[in-house]
Structure formats: C-alpha cells, structure tokens
Length: 310
Image (cartoon, rainbow, N blue to C red; front, side):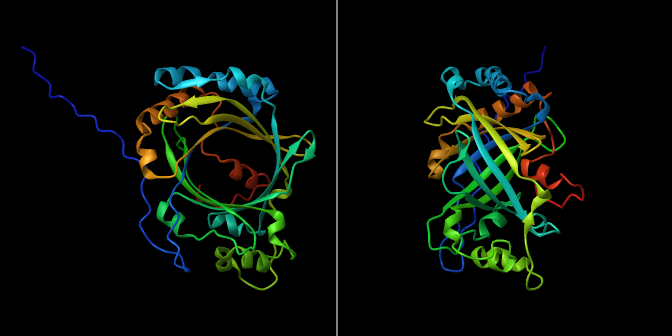
C-alpha cells in the first residue's frame, strides 16, 4: 500500500523588506522604497537595428503567457526610438563608484537635437537596504528635485534563473539648478551633494569623465506587461554604445513598477512576477550578460576595474 504523503503548504513570498524607521539630520524620516525595477543585462552583439530591439520583446510572450501575465505589443511597432546621451563623472581613482555612489548627466534628444535641460542623476546603490535608505541624497539646491528609491531586481551574477536585489536611492534634478560654479571641483560638488564630503582627501580635487566616454543610449518601448491590480508597466529594450565610433557596449531589458504605499505593493502577486522573471532568463539565455551592470561596463572600458558594490 502506498504511503500517504503529507500535503505541502506553499507559502507566498514576502513583499519587499521595509526600511527601519529613522530620521535624517534635519528630522525628515528616511525615504521608503517607491519603485520595483526589473532589469536583465544583455549582450550587445544581438542589437544591429531597430527591429532587433523588438526581437527581444518577442521572447517575453511565452513566459508572460505561462505565468498569467498579459503582454501587449501591437501598438508599439510605431513608437519612435528614444535617444539619450549619458556620461559619468568620478575621481581618477573611482572614489565615488568604489563607495557605491554614481554621478551622471544625461540629456534626451528629439529629431537629432537636445530636448530640454540636461538632467543630473546622483545615486547610492547597494545590496544593503538600510544602508541605502540612510544616505540622504537630497541636493543643496534652490530648485526642485525628485527622489526615486528603487529596489532593482537583476539575475544572479553567475547563474541563469535566479534573482538578486540592489537598492538604488536616487535623486534627479535639472543641470541649471546647480547654478554657477566649478562643476569639476569635488569641493563644489560635495557642497551640493553632502554625502560626498566624506570622500574628500585634500583641497582642490577634481572629477573627470569616466573612461573618457560619452554614451549614446538607444531605447525602444516594446510592449506593456499587465500584472493585474493596475500594475501595467511599459517594457523597454536599450542599447548603450559609445558616441563617435558607435562601439556597442551593453544592452538592457527593463520594466518598472511604481507604488505609493505598501498596501499597493501587497496587491501585486510577487510570486508570479518572480516566476516570469526567472523563466524569461531561460528563454533569453543566449542574450544574457551575467554579472554586469550598464554603469559597470562604462567603468571597465579602460581596464583597472574599480571595486563596485553592484
């Protein structure tokens, strides 16, 4: 007689961890996560045309269907490409990046010309949620700025089908908000972005263009993923390449979920999302660039790689 097996209880995965309560120096409470962004870093050699960006989008269909997620891509065939210029600033010894900070400037282009004011993005990205939350990224500027605290889900560094999470505490603001000053002076930059004061070693230090590279980002929206309960992020595929020689550097698939309260996140079926993300990695395994981030690729362009926290 066959032995009766005990019924296995499958528990739902817990939501994202919460930041332990605390306050910044001025009494404001620590920022809480408001975004969940899923990214898969891709080998650049597949991307040779606009059509090839949509080719990756086709790989979403089976994992989405198998996990009860709607993927609609029909209307995006006519969506235009988005072009942005991105550059990174750091000290010659990569002091920002080695301490989990990223400072970059980016500007979108429309019809071949810059569209609006360049945007400064300053972030602290780290696998420790509490450490990321306790960094006060708010700039000392008179104008407006926008905080984005994200949980970034990525594949494992050395294995297909897993998930690791980085926490990215970001602030974005227009370049003109900086006012007048020496924008390559670390003293001046640290006055605007106080967390960098701890990185200064002596007066007169400067930042420079990382790897001497200006990156051209080519991005294409490829469809909408409907996870239910109002979570319908646009999925996009991007290629980073150097300006001038158009040397392909790295690709990326990404989508982002935004929520205002923990209750909204609880309405999202994270188990189904995790299953989709893992299955997509297997579906696209020939495209994957494991163990990389876009920023890390730029920093490695000229050898002497920094010690990143990514």
